[in-house]
Image (cartoon, rainbow, N blue to C red):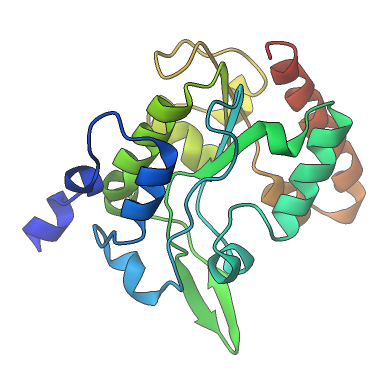
Length: 208
C-alpha cells in the first residue's frame, strides 16, 4: 500500500518531451488505481504552444468514452462561453489535473467522483509536463480541485476568482469555477452564473 500511495507518473516522463510523446506514454500510465476502471487515458488537447491553457478536474463519462477532454455537457458550455469571450476553442489547450475518469455506479449510470489527494499526486507529473511543453501565456484553473492542486490547498476560488494569482507555473495565472458547477446551479441562477463565467474568461483574453 505504501508503494502505491507514493507512486507517481514521473518515471514515464522523459525530459523535454513534446506533447505527442507525452500523449503516447500517458496511454500506458498505471500510477494510480483509476486506470483499472476507466475506458482510457484522457490526455490534454490543443495547439502545441497555445497561449491559453485551461485546467479542469478530471474527465467525465463522455470524455472517458471519446478519449478527449471537455466534450460532454460541461465542455459544450465551455465552448459557448469561450466563443462569447472572444476565445477560439481550437486556440486553447484544455486538460485536467487527473487523466482517468473516476466514477461510482448508480444504476446503469456512471457518476463522477472527486479525485483524492493520492490520485492527484500520482497524475500531477503529466500536468507539469504539459505546462512545460505548451508554455502558455495564461493558465486558468477551472474549479477548486484544479486550483488547489496548482495553487495550494488553502486557495479559494470564491475569494480569488478572475484575479491574477502570483505563481511560477505560467506568466499569468487565474482561477474561476468549473463549467459543470454552472450546470448544477438552480435554473434561476444559471444565466447569471454563465455571464460571470464569461466575464472571467474575458479577463484572461485580455492577456492573450
